[in-house]
Each structure stands twice: as C-alpha cells, then as structure tokens.
Image (cartoon, rainbow, N blue to C red):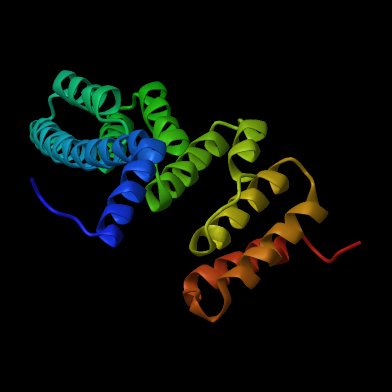
Length: 213
C-alpha cells in the first residue's frame, strides 16, 4: 500500500472534495469544448464543400451565358440562389443572369434577379444591384419604388451615384428643391475623387433645375 504523509493526504482529500463539487461541471465544460472544436472543423469542411459546389454551378452558368442558353442560365442562377444563397457566387450569378435577361429583353426576370441581390447580397454586390435596379425602375417611371431602393443607406463609395439617381427621381416628379439638394449632395459626396465628366454631368443637371426659389 502506498504511503502518504499528512500533507500529501490533505492535498488528496482536498482534491477529492473539490472534484465532488465541481467534477461534473469540469467534465461538461471539457465535453462542450471538444464538441465545439469538432463542430468548427465540421463547419469548415461543410463551408469548403459548399464553396466548391457553388463554384462548379457558377462555372456552368458562365458556360451557359457564353452559349446563350437561356434555359440553362435560369436553371443555374436559380440553383445558386436556392442552394448556395449565402455565397458570393449566388450574387455574382444573379447579376450575370440579370445582364443576359436585359440583353434578351426579359425585364421581369432581370428585375427579379437584381432584386434578389439587392435584398440578399453583401457589400459592393448588393450596392451595384440596388443601383442597377433603381436605374431600371426610373426608366419605367416607377419612381416611388425607385426612391424606396435609393433611400437605403449606401456605402460611402456609392453615395454619390445613389444621390444622383435620387435627384433624377425627384426631378422627374417635379420636386426641384429636393432634387437640387440631392444633386448637390452627390457633388459633395464625390469630392475631388469624382471623374471630371461625371462632375460636369451632375453640374448640368443641377443647372437645369434653375436657381433656388
């Protein structure tokens, strides 16, 4: 039998007491930590697998666009948004499909694809889709719907274009004061980085509204 001195025995008793009090908690925490690690690894594997599959579908979409196969384009774009909606490929695919739909004169499908990106996309892709959709709505004189899209907060690099389109809507509605404010805001947002031709066009739109009352 092992021999323990008094100090060692006290340490053992203390450890036993502590383990009785907290052993289940420690075991649970260790188990949870292990499961978290396994879960993270599984999630990473799943994400990588999803990304690979989405890339394959997007490649098929690009081939369909090159071939002008409208049916395959719609099917591939639909598969991306339905099965891989959180991936960048889904937004890119919807934008690519929307462009083809426009070229074919299918505005209804194009608008639906742009709206999907505007509602579900991320960052620059979402902004691009929102602006392109707004341009289409303005062309169709759907001014209220266009304004609803344009009133969403834009990222700084898209503020100038957003305000310019908002000015176009307000100008078409005869709201000159509001349009003038929007155009001036676009000029201010663009600053020195704005291209000269864009600044000149904005200034022309502003001048066309006449002097403020």
